[in-house]
Amino acid sequence: MGQVRESGPAFQHLALMVRDIEASHRFYTEALGFEQCASIDRPGVDFRFYRGAPDRHHDFALVQTPDPSAFPAADTKWNMLDNRVGINHIAICYPTREEFLTRLRVLKEQGVEFRQRGNHGMTHSVYVSDPDGNGIEVLYELPEEVWVNDVHGALNYWQDMPLDGDEALTDPTDYPVFSGSAQ
Image (cartoon, rainbow, N blue to C red; front, side, top):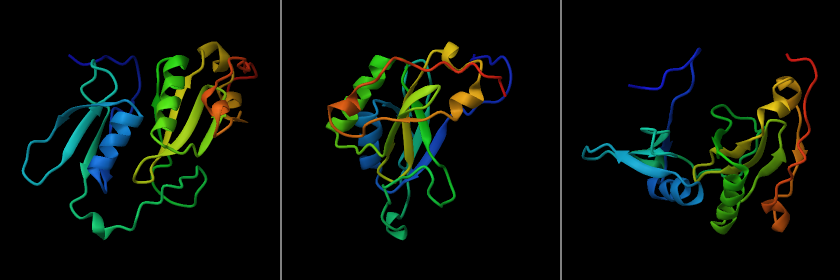
C-alpha cells in the first residue's frame, strides 16, 4: 500500500529525455548520490529509474533519446533567469546539513561547476547543470521555525554564497528568522 497524503496533490517523479544516458547516469549517481533501481527491459529502449532512498520505488527516470544528433549541443551554462521555456530547475533535497555539505564536496571533486549558491530563506542551495543543461538545485531545508511564519519573506530572501574555493564548501548556521505576516 502506498503512502497516504493528508491533502492535496504532489509531484511524485520526473522523467528526463537525455542525449547521453551514460553521462547522465554518472552525474546523477556519482555526483548527486542517487542509485539506479530499475530499467525497462525492451530492445532498443534505454529507460532507467533512480531513487534516493530504498523506501521509494523511484524518484526520477532517465530516457535515452533515440537520435541525439537531432539536437544541438547541450548548453550547460544554466542561469535561473534565462529567456527560455521549459523546466527552470529541479530541486534535490538532502536530509541534513552534513549530507548537503558532503554532496557539495562530491560535486566539486566531480568537476561540477557551481552556477549559483545562496542562503534562500527556507533552504541553503547550490545550483548546477546536469549534462543536458537542466538546472539542478542541491539543497537542504532549514528548520521550519525559520520560515513558517513568513513563507513570502523567506522565498524573497537571498544571500549570495561563494562559488569556488574552500568557502564554497562551508555553510553558516546563523539563519535569519522570518516572522512577518504570513501571505
